[in-house]
Length: 155
Figure 1 (cartoon, rainbow, N blue to C red):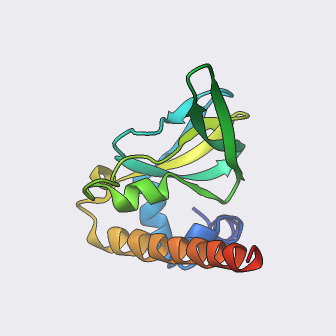
Figure 2 (cartoon, helix red, strand yellow; figure 1 turned 45 degrees about the vertical axis):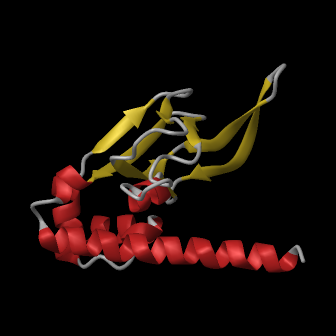
């Protein structure tokens, strides 16, 4: 990929911001984009996570279903779009006793293009794995800081 296209991709996807050119080239040769139609269930609450995604194009709804004795209501937690990660919390917590499964469901709202990142796809590429886990840690820390800010504002 040309240097100009690498820079454009890195600028438009925050998760890729700190990737070196060689890491980004390895990422693009390893992790291929996938297309999903509107209404596609990407994850269901309770699923065992084996991957996470980087949204390149489109919108995804994160939600939970709340059941009572008479009905089930869907509660939207957030909507994610291009540049956002989806499924990263479950991926990071996989294997943790009592909290390792998906905590919410994710469904596409529009046509989406995603990079799907699984441990299987990066396991034999230690440099790429290090870049992905470094940026995943950064993304989760930023999300935690944002959550803390919201909690303090609501006090």
